[in-house]
Length: 439
View (spheres, rainbow, N blue to C red):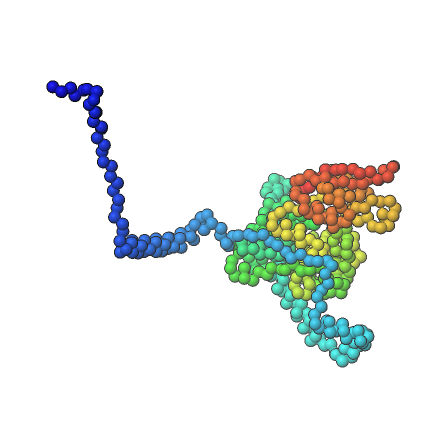
Protein backbone atom coordinates (compact mmCIF):
# COMPACT_ATOMS: atom_id res chain seq x y z
CA UNK A 1 0.00 0.00 0.00
CA UNK A 2 1.62 3.21 -0.94
CA UNK A 3 2.75 5.47 1.81
CA UNK A 4 0.80 8.72 1.57
CA UNK A 5 2.67 10.40 4.42
CA UNK A 6 6.06 10.28 2.85
CA UNK A 7 8.34 13.24 2.58
CA UNK A 8 7.92 13.44 -1.14
CA UNK A 9 4.15 13.79 -0.95
CA UNK A 10 2.76 17.38 -1.43
CA UNK A 11 0.19 18.61 1.04
CA UNK A 12 -2.82 19.97 -0.74
CA UNK A 13 -3.56 23.82 -0.21
CA UNK A 14 -6.62 25.00 1.62
CA UNK A 15 -9.44 25.82 -0.73
CA UNK A 16 -10.03 29.52 -1.23
CA UNK A 17 -13.60 30.84 -1.31
CA UNK A 18 -14.73 33.09 -4.08
CA UNK A 19 -15.37 36.72 -3.15
CA UNK A 20 -17.79 38.66 -5.32
CA UNK A 21 -18.74 42.32 -5.35
CA UNK A 22 -22.22 43.11 -6.49
CA UNK A 23 -22.33 46.27 -8.60
CA UNK A 24 -25.59 48.01 -9.46
CA UNK A 25 -26.33 48.62 -13.03
CA UNK A 26 -25.76 52.23 -14.09
CA UNK A 27 -28.89 54.39 -14.32
CA UNK A 28 -30.25 55.17 -17.66
CA UNK A 29 -30.82 58.72 -18.81
CA UNK A 30 -34.52 58.26 -18.39
CA UNK A 31 -34.16 57.13 -14.78
CA UNK A 32 -31.89 60.09 -13.98
CA UNK A 33 -34.41 62.54 -15.45
CA UNK A 34 -37.27 60.97 -13.47
CA UNK A 35 -35.39 61.11 -10.19
CA UNK A 36 -34.32 64.73 -10.76
CA UNK A 37 -37.91 65.72 -11.46
CA UNK A 38 -39.09 63.98 -8.28
CA UNK A 39 -36.37 65.75 -6.25
CA UNK A 40 -37.30 69.18 -7.62
CA UNK A 41 -41.00 68.64 -6.98
CA UNK A 42 -40.29 67.47 -3.43
CA UNK A 43 -38.09 70.49 -2.74
CA UNK A 44 -40.77 72.85 -4.05
CA UNK A 45 -43.43 71.13 -1.95
CA UNK A 46 -41.33 71.22 1.21
CA UNK A 47 -40.42 74.87 0.54
CA UNK A 48 -44.07 75.85 0.17
CA UNK A 49 -44.98 74.02 3.38
CA UNK A 50 -42.09 75.68 5.25
CA UNK A 51 -43.08 79.14 4.02
CA UNK A 52 -46.71 78.66 5.03
CA UNK A 53 -45.66 77.29 8.42
CA UNK A 54 -43.26 80.19 9.00
CA UNK A 55 -45.92 82.75 8.06
CA UNK A 56 -48.39 81.13 10.42
CA UNK A 57 -46.00 80.73 13.35
CA UNK A 58 -44.09 84.05 13.01
CA UNK A 59 -46.67 86.32 14.74
CA UNK A 60 -46.99 83.90 17.66
CA UNK A 61 -43.20 83.46 17.90
CA UNK A 62 -42.63 87.22 17.90
CA UNK A 63 -45.14 87.67 20.67
CA UNK A 64 -43.63 84.80 22.61
CA UNK A 65 -39.89 85.31 22.13
CA UNK A 66 -39.18 87.84 19.41
CA UNK A 67 -38.73 91.59 19.53
CA UNK A 68 -41.97 93.47 19.49
CA UNK A 69 -41.45 96.49 17.25
CA UNK A 70 -44.14 98.39 19.10
CA UNK A 71 -42.16 98.12 22.34
CA UNK A 72 -38.66 98.61 21.00
CA UNK A 73 -36.72 101.50 22.53
CA UNK A 74 -33.74 102.25 20.31
CA UNK A 75 -31.08 104.62 21.56
CA UNK A 76 -32.13 108.27 21.45
CA UNK A 77 -29.71 110.73 19.85
CA UNK A 78 -29.84 114.51 19.69
CA UNK A 79 -28.02 116.62 17.10
CA UNK A 80 -25.10 118.50 18.64
CA UNK A 81 -24.58 122.20 17.98
CA UNK A 82 -21.35 124.07 17.22
CA UNK A 83 -20.96 127.14 19.46
CA UNK A 84 -18.63 128.76 16.94
CA UNK A 85 -20.86 128.23 13.89
CA UNK A 86 -22.69 131.25 12.54
CA UNK A 87 -26.25 131.04 11.19
CA UNK A 88 -26.33 130.54 7.45
CA UNK A 89 -27.21 133.60 5.43
CA UNK A 90 -30.17 133.35 3.13
CA UNK A 91 -30.10 134.84 -0.32
CA UNK A 92 -32.34 137.63 0.89
CA UNK A 93 -30.12 138.52 3.84
CA UNK A 94 -27.05 138.42 1.60
CA UNK A 95 -28.75 140.83 -0.81
CA UNK A 96 -29.68 143.13 2.07
CA UNK A 97 -26.09 143.04 3.29
CA UNK A 98 -24.80 143.96 -0.15
CA UNK A 99 -27.31 146.79 -0.39
CA UNK A 100 -26.45 148.12 3.06
CA UNK A 101 -22.82 148.37 2.01
CA UNK A 102 -23.78 150.96 -0.58
CA UNK A 103 -26.53 152.71 1.40
CA UNK A 104 -26.41 153.75 5.09
CA UNK A 105 -28.51 151.59 7.43
CA UNK A 106 -30.33 154.63 8.82
CA UNK A 107 -31.49 155.63 5.35
CA UNK A 108 -32.74 152.11 4.59
CA UNK A 109 -34.73 151.92 7.82
CA UNK A 110 -36.07 155.43 7.37
CA UNK A 111 -37.28 154.73 3.85
CA UNK A 112 -39.11 151.59 4.97
CA UNK A 113 -40.71 153.36 7.93
CA UNK A 114 -41.87 156.24 5.77
CA UNK A 115 -43.43 154.06 3.11
CA UNK A 116 -45.06 151.40 5.26
CA UNK A 117 -47.82 151.96 7.77
CA UNK A 118 -48.31 149.34 10.49
CA UNK A 119 -51.86 148.51 11.45
CA UNK A 120 -53.71 146.56 14.12
CA UNK A 121 -54.10 143.77 11.59
CA UNK A 122 -50.29 143.47 11.36
CA UNK A 123 -50.03 143.06 15.13
CA UNK A 124 -52.89 140.57 15.19
CA UNK A 125 -51.35 138.60 12.33
CA UNK A 126 -47.99 138.47 14.07
CA UNK A 127 -49.46 137.23 17.34
CA UNK A 128 -51.65 134.75 15.50
CA UNK A 129 -48.54 133.06 14.14
CA UNK A 130 -46.97 133.01 17.61
CA UNK A 131 -50.20 131.66 19.07
CA UNK A 132 -50.21 128.79 16.59
CA UNK A 133 -46.66 127.84 17.60
CA UNK A 134 -47.67 127.94 21.26
CA UNK A 135 -50.81 125.89 20.68
CA UNK A 136 -48.90 123.19 18.83
CA UNK A 137 -46.22 123.09 21.54
CA UNK A 138 -48.91 122.82 24.22
CA UNK A 139 -49.80 119.38 22.84
CA UNK A 140 -46.29 118.35 23.88
CA UNK A 141 -46.74 119.64 27.42
CA UNK A 142 -47.87 117.18 30.10
CA UNK A 143 -48.79 117.39 33.75
CA UNK A 144 -46.64 115.31 36.08
CA UNK A 145 -48.73 114.26 39.05
CA UNK A 146 -46.52 112.80 41.78
CA UNK A 147 -47.86 110.90 44.75
CA UNK A 148 -46.16 109.98 48.02
CA UNK A 149 -47.70 107.92 50.79
CA UNK A 150 -47.47 109.57 54.21
CA UNK A 151 -49.34 109.48 57.50
CA UNK A 152 -51.14 112.25 59.34
CA UNK A 153 -50.86 113.09 63.03
CA UNK A 154 -53.21 110.24 63.90
CA UNK A 155 -51.35 107.63 61.87
CA UNK A 156 -53.84 107.54 59.03
CA UNK A 157 -52.36 106.99 55.56
CA UNK A 158 -52.61 109.98 53.23
CA UNK A 159 -51.17 110.68 49.77
CA UNK A 160 -49.39 113.96 49.17
CA UNK A 161 -49.50 115.08 45.55
CA UNK A 162 -47.49 117.56 43.54
CA UNK A 163 -48.02 118.94 40.07
CA UNK A 164 -45.26 119.83 37.62
CA UNK A 165 -45.02 120.59 33.92
CA UNK A 166 -43.15 118.26 31.59
CA UNK A 167 -42.19 118.46 27.91
CA UNK A 168 -42.23 115.52 25.48
CA UNK A 169 -38.79 115.73 23.84
CA UNK A 170 -38.45 112.28 22.23
CA UNK A 171 -40.56 109.42 20.87
CA UNK A 172 -39.32 105.91 20.27
CA UNK A 173 -41.37 103.12 18.73
CA UNK A 174 -42.44 102.06 22.20
CA UNK A 175 -42.38 105.08 24.54
CA UNK A 176 -42.49 108.82 25.07
CA UNK A 177 -39.63 110.56 26.88
CA UNK A 178 -40.49 113.59 28.99
CA UNK A 179 -38.22 116.25 30.47
CA UNK A 180 -39.35 117.72 33.78
CA UNK A 181 -38.15 119.19 37.04
CA UNK A 182 -36.14 116.87 39.29
CA UNK A 183 -38.56 117.56 42.14
CA UNK A 184 -41.24 115.74 40.16
CA UNK A 185 -39.24 112.52 40.40
CA UNK A 186 -37.51 112.80 43.76
CA UNK A 187 -38.92 110.61 46.51
CA UNK A 188 -42.12 109.95 44.57
CA UNK A 189 -43.92 106.68 45.23
CA UNK A 190 -45.89 107.00 42.01
CA UNK A 191 -45.80 109.18 38.90
CA UNK A 192 -48.84 109.83 36.73
CA UNK A 193 -48.50 111.66 33.43
CA UNK A 194 -51.54 113.53 32.12
CA UNK A 195 -51.43 114.45 28.44
CA UNK A 196 -53.03 117.50 26.83
CA UNK A 197 -56.43 115.82 26.34
CA UNK A 198 -56.66 114.39 29.86
CA UNK A 199 -55.31 110.93 28.98
CA UNK A 200 -53.44 109.59 32.00
CA UNK A 201 -50.67 106.99 32.07
CA UNK A 202 -48.11 105.74 34.56
CA UNK A 203 -44.62 107.20 34.26
CA UNK A 204 -41.25 105.61 34.96
CA UNK A 205 -38.14 107.53 36.03
CA UNK A 206 -35.34 107.05 33.50
CA UNK A 207 -32.73 109.25 35.14
CA UNK A 208 -32.38 112.36 37.29
CA UNK A 209 -29.67 115.01 37.37
CA UNK A 210 -29.58 116.81 40.69
CA UNK A 211 -26.88 119.21 39.48
CA UNK A 212 -29.01 120.30 36.54
CA UNK A 213 -32.22 119.99 38.53
CA UNK A 214 -33.98 118.03 35.80
CA UNK A 215 -35.28 114.50 35.27
CA UNK A 216 -36.24 112.25 32.35
CA UNK A 217 -39.45 110.21 32.59
CA UNK A 218 -40.71 107.51 30.25
CA UNK A 219 -44.31 106.59 29.39
CA UNK A 220 -45.18 103.35 27.62
CA UNK A 221 -46.84 104.35 24.34
CA UNK A 222 -49.17 101.33 24.51
CA UNK A 223 -50.85 102.95 27.53
CA UNK A 224 -51.97 105.87 25.35
CA UNK A 225 -54.83 105.42 22.91
CA UNK A 226 -54.22 105.74 19.17
CA UNK A 227 -56.11 109.03 18.74
CA UNK A 228 -54.09 110.73 21.47
CA UNK A 229 -50.83 109.39 20.03
CA UNK A 230 -51.65 111.05 16.71
CA UNK A 231 -52.00 114.45 18.40
CA UNK A 232 -49.07 114.38 20.84
CA UNK A 233 -46.42 116.83 19.70
CA UNK A 234 -42.74 116.03 20.27
CA UNK A 235 -41.01 119.36 20.96
CA UNK A 236 -37.73 119.43 18.99
CA UNK A 237 -34.52 120.60 20.63
CA UNK A 238 -33.22 123.77 18.99
CA UNK A 239 -29.84 125.47 18.72
CA UNK A 240 -29.45 127.88 21.62
CA UNK A 241 -26.03 128.98 20.33
CA UNK A 242 -27.81 130.94 17.59
CA UNK A 243 -29.96 132.89 20.09
CA UNK A 244 -29.29 136.64 20.18
CA UNK A 245 -30.39 139.60 22.28
CA UNK A 246 -33.79 140.84 21.11
CA UNK A 247 -35.01 137.46 19.82
CA UNK A 248 -38.69 136.78 20.47
CA UNK A 249 -39.28 133.74 22.70
CA UNK A 250 -42.23 131.77 24.09
CA UNK A 251 -42.44 130.30 27.57
CA UNK A 252 -44.58 127.14 27.86
CA UNK A 253 -45.19 124.63 30.60
CA UNK A 254 -46.14 126.38 33.83
CA UNK A 255 -44.82 129.97 33.71
CA UNK A 256 -47.90 131.14 35.62
CA UNK A 257 -47.58 128.35 38.17
CA UNK A 258 -50.33 126.41 36.37
CA UNK A 259 -49.58 123.71 33.81
CA UNK A 260 -50.53 124.64 30.21
CA UNK A 261 -49.99 128.35 30.79
CA UNK A 262 -47.77 130.42 28.49
CA UNK A 263 -45.99 133.75 28.23
CA UNK A 264 -44.27 135.77 25.48
CA UNK A 265 -41.14 137.90 25.71
CA UNK A 266 -37.66 138.59 24.37
CA UNK A 267 -34.06 137.69 25.08
CA UNK A 268 -32.54 140.55 27.06
CA UNK A 269 -28.99 139.24 27.41
CA UNK A 270 -26.82 136.23 26.49
CA UNK A 271 -24.05 135.40 28.96
CA UNK A 272 -21.38 133.23 27.34
CA UNK A 273 -18.80 130.91 28.89
CA UNK A 274 -20.25 131.00 32.38
CA UNK A 275 -18.53 128.49 34.73
CA UNK A 276 -20.95 125.81 35.88
CA UNK A 277 -20.40 122.49 37.62
CA UNK A 278 -17.88 120.45 35.60
CA UNK A 279 -17.83 122.78 32.61
CA UNK A 280 -19.02 125.95 30.90
CA UNK A 281 -22.47 127.04 29.75
CA UNK A 282 -24.38 129.90 28.22
CA UNK A 283 -27.15 131.53 30.19
CA UNK A 284 -30.05 133.23 28.46
CA UNK A 285 -31.80 136.08 30.26
CA UNK A 286 -35.33 137.10 29.36
CA UNK A 287 -37.98 139.57 30.42
CA UNK A 288 -40.46 136.72 30.97
CA UNK A 289 -42.29 136.65 34.27
CA UNK A 290 -42.18 133.02 35.40
CA UNK A 291 -43.34 131.26 38.53
CA UNK A 292 -40.62 129.27 40.26
CA UNK A 293 -40.47 125.53 40.61
CA UNK A 294 -43.19 124.13 38.34
CA UNK A 295 -41.25 123.93 35.07
CA UNK A 296 -41.06 126.47 32.25
CA UNK A 297 -39.53 125.68 28.86
CA UNK A 298 -38.32 128.34 26.45
CA UNK A 299 -39.11 128.07 22.73
CA UNK A 300 -38.00 130.07 19.71
CA UNK A 301 -40.50 131.19 17.08
CA UNK A 302 -39.99 127.91 15.20
CA UNK A 303 -41.33 126.01 18.21
CA UNK A 304 -37.93 124.53 19.12
CA UNK A 305 -36.85 124.25 22.74
CA UNK A 306 -33.78 126.41 23.43
CA UNK A 307 -33.69 126.07 27.22
CA UNK A 308 -35.63 125.93 30.45
CA UNK A 309 -36.13 128.21 33.44
CA UNK A 310 -33.20 127.62 35.79
CA UNK A 311 -34.14 127.98 39.44
CA UNK A 312 -30.49 127.85 40.58
CA UNK A 313 -29.72 131.31 39.11
CA UNK A 314 -32.09 133.45 41.14
CA UNK A 315 -29.41 135.99 41.98
CA UNK A 316 -28.83 136.84 38.36
CA UNK A 317 -32.54 136.68 37.51
CA UNK A 318 -33.25 139.57 39.89
CA UNK A 319 -31.18 141.76 37.59
CA UNK A 320 -32.07 140.49 34.14
CA UNK A 321 -35.42 138.77 34.66
CA UNK A 322 -35.80 135.02 34.18
CA UNK A 323 -32.56 133.11 33.68
CA UNK A 324 -32.66 130.18 31.28
CA UNK A 325 -30.23 127.31 30.84
CA UNK A 326 -28.94 127.02 27.27
CA UNK A 327 -30.02 123.64 25.93
CA UNK A 328 -27.16 123.23 23.44
CA UNK A 329 -24.68 122.91 26.30
CA UNK A 330 -26.66 120.02 27.78
CA UNK A 331 -27.65 117.90 24.78
CA UNK A 332 -25.00 115.31 25.64
CA UNK A 333 -26.32 115.07 29.19
CA UNK A 334 -29.94 114.92 28.01
CA UNK A 335 -29.04 112.17 25.56
CA UNK A 336 -27.64 110.04 28.38
CA UNK A 337 -30.60 110.76 30.64
CA UNK A 338 -33.21 109.89 28.01
CA UNK A 339 -31.42 106.57 27.44
CA UNK A 340 -31.41 105.83 31.17
CA UNK A 341 -27.66 106.34 31.58
CA UNK A 342 -26.04 108.05 34.56
CA UNK A 343 -24.19 111.31 33.95
CA UNK A 344 -20.63 111.46 35.29
CA UNK A 345 -20.12 113.83 38.22
CA UNK A 346 -16.79 115.26 39.37
CA UNK A 347 -17.90 118.36 41.25
CA UNK A 348 -15.85 121.50 40.57
CA UNK A 349 -16.32 124.96 39.13
CA UNK A 350 -13.37 126.77 37.67
CA UNK A 351 -11.74 128.87 35.02
CA UNK A 352 -8.82 128.50 32.68
CA UNK A 353 -5.51 129.98 33.79
CA UNK A 354 -5.18 132.99 31.46
CA UNK A 355 -2.11 134.91 30.35
CA UNK A 356 -2.19 137.38 33.23
CA UNK A 357 -2.41 134.53 35.73
CA UNK A 358 0.50 132.80 33.99
CA UNK A 359 2.55 135.97 34.34
CA UNK A 360 1.91 135.88 38.08
CA UNK A 361 3.54 132.45 38.24
CA UNK A 362 0.50 130.17 38.09
CA UNK A 363 0.96 126.89 36.19
CA UNK A 364 -1.19 126.23 33.13
CA UNK A 365 -4.38 124.31 33.82
CA UNK A 366 -7.88 124.81 35.25
CA UNK A 367 -8.08 126.97 38.34
CA UNK A 368 -10.63 125.56 40.80
CA UNK A 369 -12.79 128.38 42.11
CA UNK A 370 -15.26 126.15 43.95
CA UNK A 371 -15.28 122.52 45.01
CA UNK A 372 -18.92 121.50 45.46
CA UNK A 373 -19.52 120.22 48.99
CA UNK A 374 -20.19 116.48 49.08
CA UNK A 375 -19.01 115.98 45.50
CA UNK A 376 -16.47 113.29 44.50
CA UNK A 377 -13.75 115.94 44.13
CA UNK A 378 -14.57 117.32 47.59
CA UNK A 379 -14.47 113.89 49.22
CA UNK A 380 -11.17 113.08 47.50
CA UNK A 381 -9.52 116.18 49.01
CA UNK A 382 -9.40 118.79 46.23
CA UNK A 383 -9.56 122.37 47.49
CA UNK A 384 -10.46 125.82 46.21
CA UNK A 385 -7.39 127.35 44.60
CA UNK A 386 -6.02 124.07 43.24
CA UNK A 387 -5.01 124.03 39.60
CA UNK A 388 -5.95 120.83 37.76
CA UNK A 389 -3.16 120.00 35.32
CA UNK A 390 -3.93 116.40 34.35
CA UNK A 391 -6.83 113.97 34.38
CA UNK A 392 -6.06 110.27 33.91
CA UNK A 393 -2.60 111.15 32.51
CA UNK A 394 -4.18 113.55 29.99
CA UNK A 395 -2.95 117.13 30.22
CA UNK A 396 -5.68 119.63 31.05
CA UNK A 397 -5.30 123.23 29.94
CA UNK A 398 -8.91 124.32 29.33
CA UNK A 399 -12.31 123.79 30.92
CA UNK A 400 -13.51 122.14 27.72
CA UNK A 401 -10.73 119.55 27.99
CA UNK A 402 -11.59 118.90 31.63
CA UNK A 403 -15.31 118.63 30.83
CA UNK A 404 -14.59 116.17 28.02
CA UNK A 405 -12.50 113.98 30.31
CA UNK A 406 -15.20 113.99 33.01
CA UNK A 407 -17.95 113.15 30.52
CA UNK A 408 -15.90 110.23 29.18
CA UNK A 409 -15.34 108.71 32.63
CA UNK A 410 -17.43 105.75 33.72
CA UNK A 411 -19.59 106.17 36.79
CA UNK A 412 -18.13 104.16 39.67
CA UNK A 413 -14.54 104.20 38.42
CA UNK A 414 -11.59 105.88 40.15
CA UNK A 415 -9.62 108.44 38.13
CA UNK A 416 -6.21 109.91 38.86
CA UNK A 417 -6.18 113.69 39.02
CA UNK A 418 -3.06 115.79 39.41
CA UNK A 419 -3.32 119.31 40.84
CA UNK A 420 -0.81 122.03 41.59
CA UNK A 421 -1.32 123.47 45.07
CA UNK A 422 0.28 126.65 46.27
CA UNK A 423 2.41 126.46 49.41
CA UNK A 424 5.14 128.43 51.10
CA UNK A 425 7.68 127.30 48.55
CA UNK A 426 5.48 127.72 45.49
CA UNK A 427 3.27 125.23 43.68
CA UNK A 428 3.58 121.54 44.51
CA UNK A 429 2.08 118.68 42.46
CA UNK A 430 -0.37 116.44 44.32
CA UNK A 431 -2.12 113.31 43.03
CA UNK A 432 -5.66 112.38 44.02
CA UNK A 433 -7.88 109.42 43.26
CA UNK A 434 -11.43 110.57 42.61
CA UNK A 435 -14.30 108.11 42.38
CA UNK A 436 -16.73 109.34 39.72
CA UNK A 437 -20.41 109.27 40.74
CA UNK A 438 -23.68 109.90 38.97
CA UNK A 439 -25.11 113.43 39.12
